[in-house]
Image 1: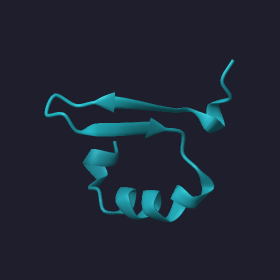
Image 2: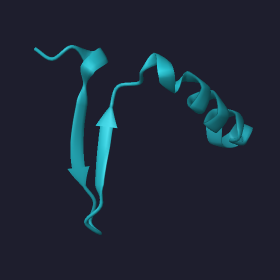
Image 3: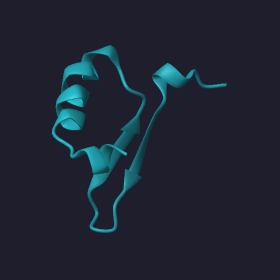
Image 4: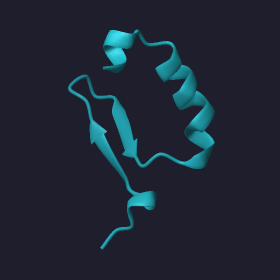
Length: 45
């Protein structure tokens, strides 16, 4: 069974670009807070 903290997979978008879907890491904290902080209250809801 895969541990969730190490979860990672790649998907290919319709336009051919590859996208990594992975679990959040401690290093992601600042970027995540910045992204969420820039959203409207309705978007966060």
